[in-house]
Image (tube, rainbow, N blue to C red; front, top):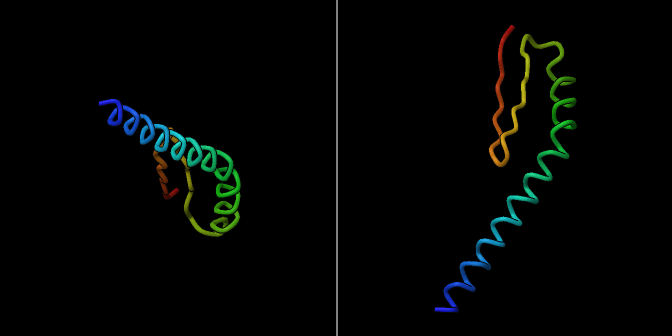
Length: 64
């Protein structure tokens, strides 16, 4: 019984750490990605909007 609780705690800690690191990288890399895509698509008639919602990354491309 104790082994199952320990295993569940280890799995929970692993996933929490993984998503925490992933979210950290998303928040660090989002301005770089945004500026790169804006420079890339400056001549294109598209507007890129990034929306960050914790662990989900949504990319919306809207035409003018």
